[in-house]
Length: 185
Image 1 (cartoon, rainbow, N blue to C red):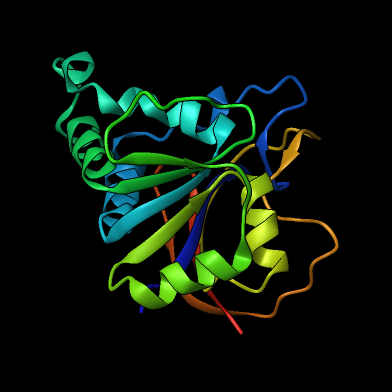
Image 2: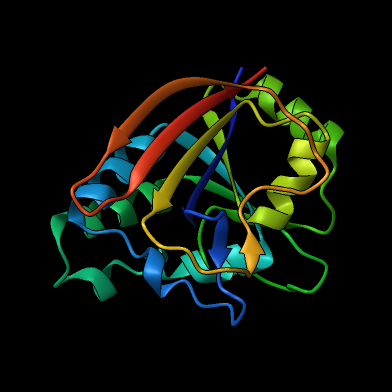
């Protein structure tokens, strides 16, 4: 049985993007990116909302990373090897391999997928993750907190959902980013 894992890079005050939708402050350095790669490596299937999918689809094209670091190339391979499910009412087709579209997020279908999948599943995008949190589907959270306060924008974690968590791990990086890994109770 796979675990459903929510991963997010967020500001210290809990936002994944500022009020203008910018998240350039969240770009990980090599140390953090290598750690993210290791966290993401066990994921066999990603569940994405449309915006998160469109943001990450750039990793599908390795030729665009030919001059980049080995860490970036490694992440591209991780992205490409995973199955991807995109939840969207507006997206008509996908631009990446191993990807399918679902028009609605169905908690029962995701629960069945978790039960049938030996590998972990990752969920990306705070709006989609909020639905999974509300349905009690998220098993773990991997949060990377950046040393910046942005004062508003798109929240990393959902409002109006109470979840007890158990801290499993933490790590501090040279650039001030802090990683916390929780299991939901």
